Image (cartoon, rainbow, N blue to C red; front, side, top):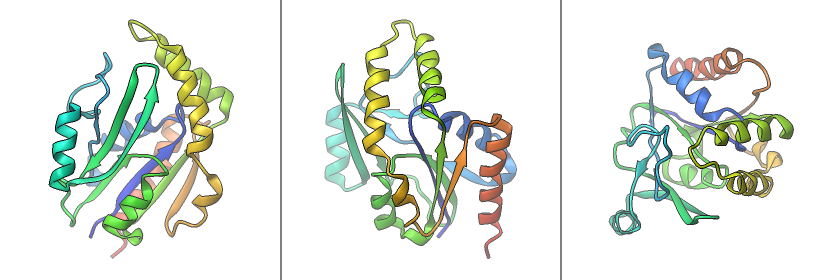
Length: 197
């Protein structure tokens, strides 16, 4: 079984940027697990790259097939949006990386074994995170700052840093430094994993 590297962190910690940077390094031999969502696609997103965008009916059908590993929802100002991970194209002999949540980790542990999951927690001070989130939202055609605030507040209950110390494989990375620096830390983790045998 290969490793699944789970990037977790509060909104605005740089998960998407770090993921793009890591995936651009072809020497890593790590593939992205693309999650699913029922929320609408944002202007700068691409189907099959950022998410697989599905309807509620499609999600329910996948759940009946038993291919959903974990599922969560958020009550947003636009209604309830579901996010989930499906076990459709995961080759157990390859390494993967995914942006997910701390609450979803227990399902990954159960499905793949905790020894095969490496948690990478990206951490950043609240002021910088909020500024990043506001700046990112301001680039949308119709910015929704209420949703930014909702996500920011929900992060406080969605993440438990104390629990991180209980994971068998976990690294905390401060993302207040330049992207090249913290992406290099992530790449080093993956390179070490590639050479574990």
